[in-house]
Every structure is written in structure tokens, then in C-alpha cells.
Image 1 (cartoon, rainbow, N blue to C red):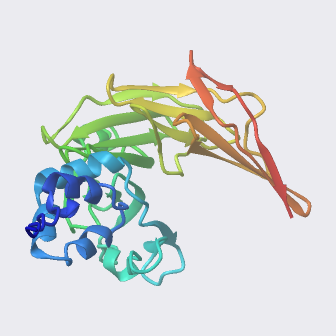
Image 2: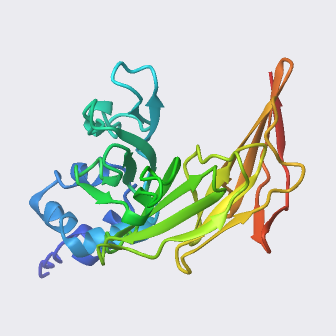
Length: 312
């Protein structure tokens, strides 16, 4: 009887780079996931650091997790300053000091908003839009168009209210900045689009706005449109189309407006459309009304669905 030769042990499935990459691709998109996995061995570190894999990883997960948010502290001795508040648990929690605000007390920076990992600020002393990447420390100051700075007749700042929006292409890293100004005396709003790829501002466009309105809240991005709420008893929505570079005002539904016991804010609806939150404070209770979507067409807002929640 002849002895049987033992068959070779089957190769481990993880020895196949293609299969391993598919597994690694499905790691959660948390800040600690890839660094911790890269500590397993040199082979894993080589695969995880490959630029092609990193592009696939970002494309697979699409939307990265929210690391935290900024709120403006108005009680600071040096004036209003944004403070980072992390939202993730350990080990993915980002220390607030890691995203400290790059502002000298006398620099005159005012925080506007964050989007796509970029923060937008306005330097009211130098009249510049400032783009800041809290993760990399990248910072770019962009002087606003000269036409927005001065009034030829009176030689003073043409606009008394300002706001803006920033958005970034997740693939190329290029970004766009929308700067919007309004003047309550002239009842006009102006907007202009900056493209980082060209390094230039586009044409300045304007539209009439209701009197006594102000742009106080961050913008909401809906498709290619950037929207700001025009406060003053629900005056409407200021909309800038980044593709067409057009600016107009969308009127609110008649039953949606600010009152002495309510507050209105724009938000992104669950389906990606525009939503409006209404906080109503009556006696001892507070209710929040959230239309799931607002249709923007023909110069007016149309409410499609309501949801109301009350709490004490």
C-alpha cells in the first residue's frame, strides 16, 4: 500500500489582492478606519495608501461622515469666534483645538458657513472672502470685485449686508465661492461667483429684494442652486443658480412667515430638495413644522407636505 501525498494547503483568500481590496473598500468611512487597518502589515499599508484605492474608497462611500460643526461664540472677549464641536465618538472624535479658528482679534474675520469640508469667512476690514480648509490648514483670501466695494458717488461701502456660500468638487478639489451682498436702501441684492480653476470672479448680477430684509443664516445648496432665507416676516428665498449664474427672489407661501412667536429657517429635505423649518413658541410649548419639500418654480414656493411636532 502506497502512502498518499498530502495535497498543498489552499491559499488564503486574503492573499488575493483584488479580493482584499474589495473587503477594505467596505470599511466604514470614519477617520480612524484606514489608519488602523494600515497597521496590520506592510502589504495592507501599501494597498490602503494607493491613490487609486483612495479614490475608489471615496466614490464608494459617497458622503463622508460629519466630523462636527461650528457655532459662533458671541461671549468671547476677542469678539464673535466660531468654536468647533465634534460629533463622533472616540477614536474618531476630533479635538476642538485641532480645528481652531485662524483669526487674530484685529483681523476682522467673520464666519459664514461650512460645506464640503471647507469653511467660508468674510474679512470685513479688507473686504475679502476667505476660504479655509480646517483639515489641511489651507487658506485663501479672495478680494471681492471692486464694483462691490465702493459707491462712485458717495465713496463708501456699497453694501451693508453680506453673506456667501462655498462648494467643492469632491473629485478635482476645485471649489467655487458665491458672494452675495444687499443694500436695504436701494432694495437690491448683488451676487458674484468665484471659480478656483480660473482664479477669477464672474459677472456681478443683481435683483430687487423686499425692503428691510437681511441675510442672517447660512445658505442651503439644492442641486445647483444656493438659497438664502430673506428674513423679515418670511419675505422669501434669495436663489443663485451656479450654472446659469442667475439671481432671483422666490416668494414664500402665504402661511409661512416670521412672527413674534415663531422663527423660520431653510434646510435640506430628506429627498435633497428645499425644506423650511418653522419653530413656533406659544405659551409653554414649542412646535416645529417641517415641510418635507418646497417646490421652487415660477417665482414662488409651493408647499408639498407638512409634518408637525410639538414638545414642552
